[in-house]
Length: 207
Image (cartoon, rainbow, N blue to C red; front, side):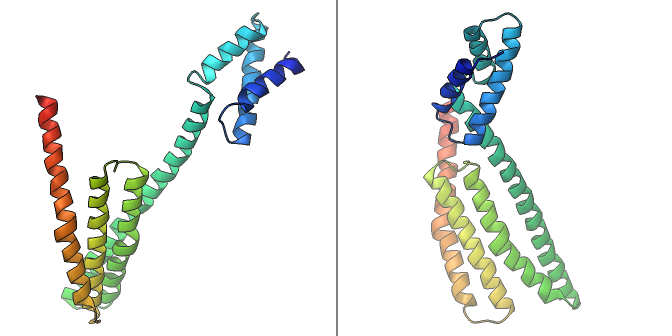
């Protein structure tokens, strides 16, 4: 049985760590107490039992528990966000494709499907895709980040210009122009620069 002094020692060790979550600290104290009691019932003294519990639970420090917990929580959110993004991308792309087919066949409802598909891809799918790339920390290099930002923004402008064009609204040419300018003078240079740098890195790694 753990004494009050031993419980206070466990609590002080955990509370003095860099774990910011109060709930996580309380859960960790309970977990340590259970492990220590089991080890003490096996004949270990408190110091050995505490060290055993520490090695089993937090071999790399208390902060590791918080990091792993936050990582798992964020990882689940990112997975759900990815699933929503890819499903929405498919739905909006499918809507635009079917709408285009309906337009060619002169079926009713073509414009609604095309417009909803274009707007969905432009303002839901593409921004979410960019957010996922940043949350995944895949884009560690500035040039890689800028490539995705300019590419996404240019596609949004081009799709929006297509929407304006289909509705015969003013400003379609401006949107197209801005979209293609960003695509040609900002996205493509970063895109080919990253390809060039990747080829250099591969040649160095194989040399």
